[in-house]
Length: 346
Ligand code: SF4
Image 1 (tube, protein in one colour):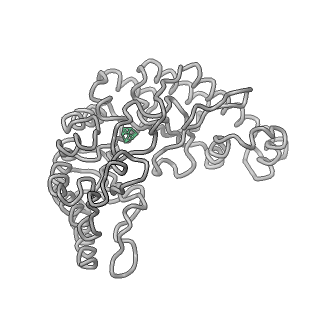
Image 2 (cartoon, rainbow, N blue to C red):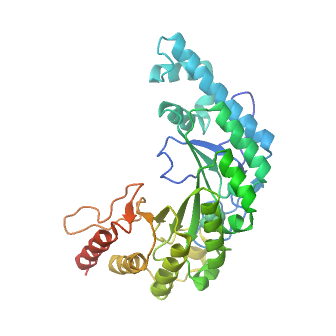
Image 3 (cartoon, rainbow, N blue to C red):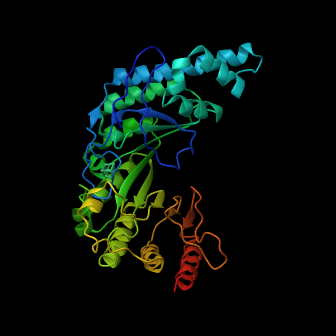
């Protein structure tokens, strides 16, 4: 995503990505940094060709103030129309009539969805907000909560390596200032595969970063990528991922099955015969192997369209709920359901 032009009192910057589990489409997106400070992962096209930039806290605060002014203006129109502060389409139309240049603003729809849903959740963009200096991040969090006191949960992406390097007291301060949940791209716990995909984190970084985030009080959500190692590395990927997850014991583990995407280094470098795609049965076998080796208390989630497998009844094999399944309580049930899928695709 390019740097956006900022002019006038209403203007603020919005990034492109956030995890789907964050309030559906109703989280307030606050852009703290631009793009990804690492940007080398071979399977990822999100910020390719875009330069990473830290944004000065004053600029972020000015964005939050602009969003606050729009929220106040909408509320005022609502009160004047006898709607007691609630948002209706007539109120939104009136607002756009008064500020026609905002019709084309990429973030205003997001802000209106956030307000209409009660203004409860916020997500800090882009790929690794924890890379900011703790004092700057704290300043932004405090300001965000003062402008939008209705916010109940603030979340962000964070890289394992960044978390592993951050002093524990800084993480605790950031949590205390209001950041509740961190989404971490673990992808795999296999050391060779981590090198191959150029993740920039070792299994040790994953464990250290994840455990430090847990110790600081954050809710930790780890994303793993079934199928990332293809057929050849499937077993090592499954078992080493389970090993690392067991050591972290995060609150959430989310499955994001690997798909080779055009625009990624992986896709561009792959020859026609080297994509090594796994069949649905092989994918399910690998997931079964990973889950069977888990000994932890986490929620295991399949909240992404990539978890597409169906069962003999024609329904989705695994629930795509954001809260997923409780392990260990539902482990036997999930494994049995995956067995059903393996049989179905045999
Ligand atoms: S750290 Fe995340 S955003 Fe950055 S390149 Fe890797 S997967 Fe993409």
